[in-house]
Image (cartoon, rainbow, N blue to C red; front, top):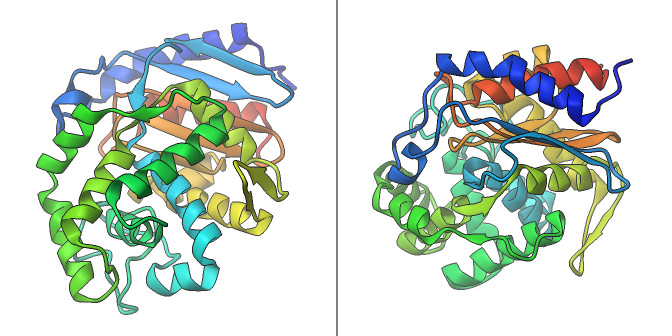
Length: 305
């Protein structure tokens, strides 16, 4: 079996980098459009303070849709499984992640917590009356998961998100009309936009992934995450974490993962490792081209079954 070392990871990044030319940086936000398409970084947290890195590990980026796994964990912790999944489904999505039509099916609820409609429902469940209170809960949780007390919201990105939230605003009012959210839609959107604009690096993501890799109750920041909730989130990541490419990804890679349009990607290898990747060159499904290739190669070494 290949032993993972930093030299090996560096070789991996160099091998993957030429494929980045086949993708493009997201430009729907000015802040995302400033990223370099040939940027690529990876961190693997193997536990016991063993974190291996390669590429531009100093790059910081907004977490975007990766935040959805953390908001879901918090909702499960505060509200319980029955409450959460009475208002959002556990099915694989089809079509665009921010679609209105394809994510409200016969059940009348969003298909899963990782499409935007489902994520808005989940944010509505978080504790706190005002947007700032709910954002603080999420930021504090991510700080505890990563061990990084400096993690914060990038205000410029959050305000761009809000200014360009027409589709999510439509989703919010649709959900409110069906009584799936009770928060004022504009306040809900502002909370969600700030959560997506939390700034991290690949080491932060790897550390968070490693905490979620063990099948045990997690005592963290004065709260206990139930092992069952953590396993449930990992399973949802596997079959719905990569947008419409999730089915193919599950078959070809098998590492529970979640991506974001910034190029952020987190992987959780049960009982083995946490993986953080940054690769802003995206494919047609809005997944990181470099991230997908790196995960595929890591899966072979980590012997994912």
